[in-house]
Length: 384
Image (cartoon, rainbow, N blue to C red; front, side, top):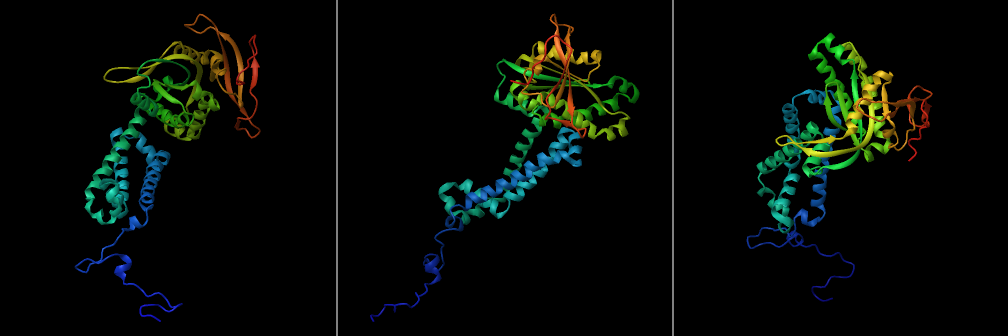
């Protein structure tokens, strides 16, 4: 056997630790050939994904679930600046907690030092000042919170459309308009006073906002004791949202009936009108920008809402609106015939709309629409 050869079957000799991990320098110190991040090429991506997931879950979950809690409802009632500041502090704390950790600083170093030097990420981690993550987190939290709360103040869709300039040049659109009026608010003001009735209306509008949002509706404006909701025909047609939204608002108010009775001595009663047609949609204003709708559809919807008193019906819809809906399953339609509305030369056919009760007394969306025809022409809606 020659010197330096290893007998067959004998274990390989172990190498010094310095040879396994790297080469020693002239001072005898060990230098690693690769950092943990370099040894694991996917580690940085996984770390970033983990941080994004944590921030998305915490901040997104807060925006989704907080409004349903007592604290969220209290923030809804608070002034804009108070609610904005409170959420900004919370979001900033979360981002600082995540980005301020060792894992977060590694990610920040990778982003700041560039892809080439990111291979030695661990060795540069300490070069990232802790204050940088704090400042960055505050900027991110401020921007996110500002955009979100500003959207809540003027409407997310309105903010988006103004920023993107969607209606910088006016355009013709086919739209649904739903007018919802709170019945008896004038007499209520005489009984409980203007301050209390203001709180009453504010609570009604607040409770109505979630069902409207769930049905993809956009609150165009509040006018006294009335709110105006709109959809494009494409959005309102899907799932019969433009009609179903009214009954969803009713259900939301019914769940808080005991609270209204206790605080104001009355439960909200609603009247509504639904109409659809072409309008001019455009951006107007100078120091204050807004998106507005012009056309006969707005006036006609208002006249139909006024007709709910004369016809003693809670919810009226025009034939123009009903024929644009995808289907009317679960709704009962009562044809009230042709009516001359103030300001219109030609008569308009209107229908009373109610929900179909099921066997257990709940509204159902499975039954065929019940038609009671008092006019000369049979209706044929929701089949397109």
